[in-house]
Image (cartoon, protein in one colour):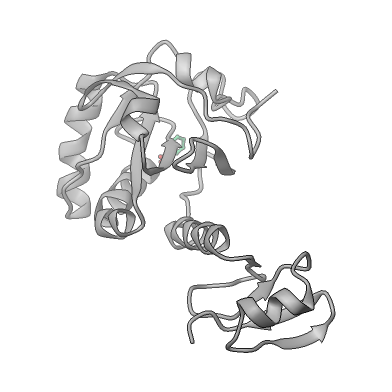
Length: 210
Ligand code: BEZ
């Protein structure tokens, strides 16, 4: 069975473009955007790697470390990074795991044989600083991921970790949030002195930006 949200992210030691890492040591204290791609020197993957590199300041601002993975070698990754930098007009500075033996790919269930027998699909794991898996997403070979959504869900998780709120459909930072139904009226009045709108007793909206 694959990994589920709420599970501890399994540890591994492996070679990357920035040397050997022990995943838990490398991730310590940070959120992690851990993502696999099918293969180096392929077009969609090139754009995804470029986008991740371009967004480095956005990941940094959120205390998130990106970590890529495919079953290609360190040498292949390093050659391809030059192409990513040239074609996507960026400087890729995060590590990419070289998982030729598919050790981590199997541990994280990144090979979906109905899609490809050998290549990793486009898996995403958002892992928190307690090394708990908080979100998983899986995209097919032919569709690149939406990086606005990746940043949005990190913002939403960080928001809902810091206050007793939840984020409604299509929430983006700045929008109103939902006061969790487990918060009593008495507590809600104390915790949200800015006030809130009650549409139903279980659906109370508040503006945490005030
Ligand atoms: C791509 O990144 O363009 C790609 C990789 C594997 C299969 C199809 C497309």
